[in-house]
Amino acid sequence: MAKQWREIYDEWEKAVAPGLQQLTASDGFRDFMAASAKVTSALTAEFERASRRWLHFWNLPAATDVRKLRQQVAAVDRELKGLKNLVFEVAAAAPGDVAPATNGAAQPVSSKLAAKKAPAKTASKA
Image 1 (tube, rainbow, N blue to C red):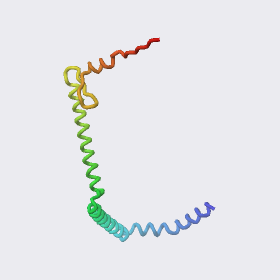
Image 2: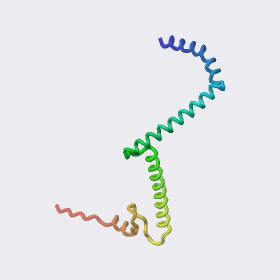
Image 3: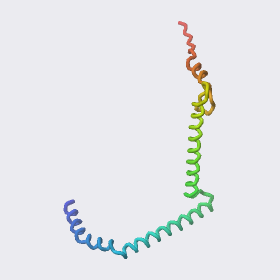
Image 4: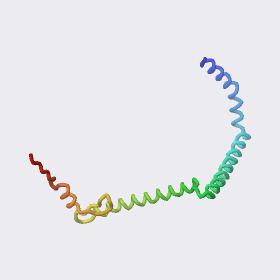
């Protein structure tokens, strides 16, 4: 059954393809497609303007508002990463045993090591 449909389709394609290729290669078709793209673009822009006005009327964010906020968050994130790298560079170049902690406060390395090496008190009486 599938072979029959495939054969029917192939025969139809052989009959129609040359005419479609000629149509799509014509200047008129290209002009129509260009005009169609312009109309589609204009309608899309008008719809976006109208929906933005409607959403703002109801005090709701539009896609443009969300896009601006995402750009601002990305800029803050980049700046924060740059500042973090700067802190680590300064700490690495600083004399002494001061290293930046993950919570933003600098702690002496020696106190960190002392805390790690402190013996655990285990009282077990049997």
